[in-house]
Image (cartoon, rainbow, N blue to C red; front, side):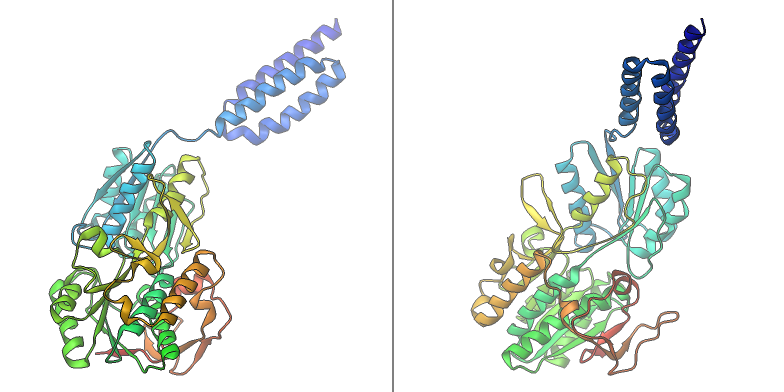
Length: 446
């Protein structure tokens, strides 16, 4: 009789386990109790029944980890999309994600300022958005304030210098400086006057870091070719100010004898001025000839192309997998890649022009003007960075120019200060939030 009661007790315990296994929060407890059930049933010599029930418990736990069926990627663009390289690249990334993943929808809002970030985000979440991205730091940061209210939604923002994160608030940026270094090699080879101009937005860690990558490439070309090259930077004051960008581009050409021009702004005005003036232009953020049809390879010597989709795919895959604790700082470079819907493999950043990549992307009109040793070095360094075995920020010392942006607790180092020796790789945190000085030799114009 006691044996029957014992068996009845075991059955009741097993039923309780099955009910408990239906509760997602109790997975750990289920496994712990399951071990106790095994002990009890072994004593009662009902091993076969125990194994059967145990399989059911395990199956319940596996079901709990099933991926989500679909997602909606919502990108808030700080500017308009058409006619811009920055938001244009983000928009293309969203479309490429949706093309590759039929279960992912891409939606967006344009010209989103900080006051509209959260109202638009909540509106899109109400319509089913699973992931909400602010594509610039100044308007993406408010998303952290609503992240706790929507624990099942991923929020993300571009990094300018702030590295604030939360469990579901992700920060991201590509290692654009790697491709900019390759552009610098080409620009340094092309200049005949020895003067290269940068139409830039405003001093920030993001801008300074990218300009440093370009400058190091220029200086390596100058050393290899025995040239004396000056890089002039003049700030506009914002990312998208077409008339002001045009004025500064003209100033660099007419007053500083610049014959190679690039930009750290977002409009097409500097390119227009380069074309009108008959000088070489180095593109930013997108293959402007191949994707936008802006100008041609008689003016655009090379561009760098940013594939934000590589970073977005990382976020989307984590969300679909039900990962409640994704990596919250993504800083991906040429060694990271994505396979597009058509099978093309694209690194996070690369040099590109007229739909060609690598040294094939160098303008056919520019190529004869570039010494073979520079072409070979561009090819070598690109291959090394794609393979993750070389980086310009590891290779070179960082010596302060004495100019830059004072940060709270981190003033601009005095001119001539070696902040980082050659052969040492700065931490991601330092590169993303504390690189606040121009490299020695950069000329910052008032």
